[in-house]
Image (cartoon, rainbow, N blue to C red):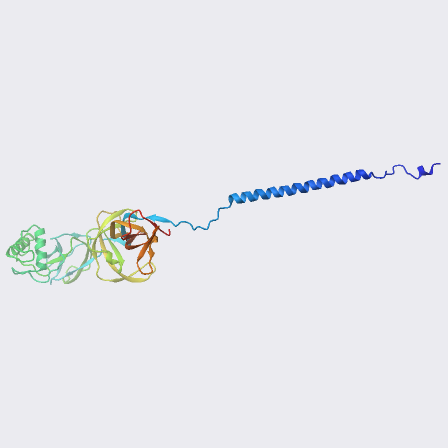
Length: 370
């Protein structure tokens, strides 16, 4: 029996091939190195791309400050415009006071319009006429040669009613006395040629009776009624300090609730200061401004606004207010490419300011902060 063959069981593994093992390990190490090299190369390439991209996208850094913004000096028209709250109605009312002794025998109805030469009320069945003017009668006009503003009121109204008069405008002449008699005859009253205190009521113009406080059969002396201007009007309660922009006959613009505009004319500015409340409930001194409308409006009443152009400057040189520089020594200047240029300021309006000075010209560029 062969003992060596029995000791070598069937299927036993043959000893490993050392060369093959070395070859396999070498292949694995080579593959790992290739992966490592590829990774390093990829990282290098990626870094290069990022660096290139950053270099292209990064803005160029500069130590130079940005150029200042400039505007041109312009030649334009400037207007100082203000707006005030107001209400629509018939304007401020005025009290009519009787000055004749006697009994009231006729009174007008509220809403009645009374014109020059028409009766406003009657005392002992004698009409008291409406005359236009600014000076009330304070004495009996019964002698030729009397002169004064009350005489002028009588003569102006008689002339407006169609009567011929002679002599100076403020003198009661014989032809004036004759004209008074003719007027009295036409009115079917006693022809005395005399105009007494209380025979006429002198008011600025045609009136609308707003309310009547007196009663028929009562005495004719004392408060009788309140009258207003005949047409719709706007009344503004203006802060006393701002009231200086208003004056009689000043043209204004009235802004209606529907957005439309209509012209207006200041009829009166009150000389009495009253306390008025603002939107916060605080009181401040205010004056009433009465404004007549130059056109018809559909509204009966309601809130309005009044626009006033207090100052206007035509064809002046102007720059934005933000272009002005206050000088340490006083006054103002503008900054140009050549340095500071001293200027004199005028009207400020709408964010612009009027400037003038020896070095200022239209089209010149100046620095502004906005």
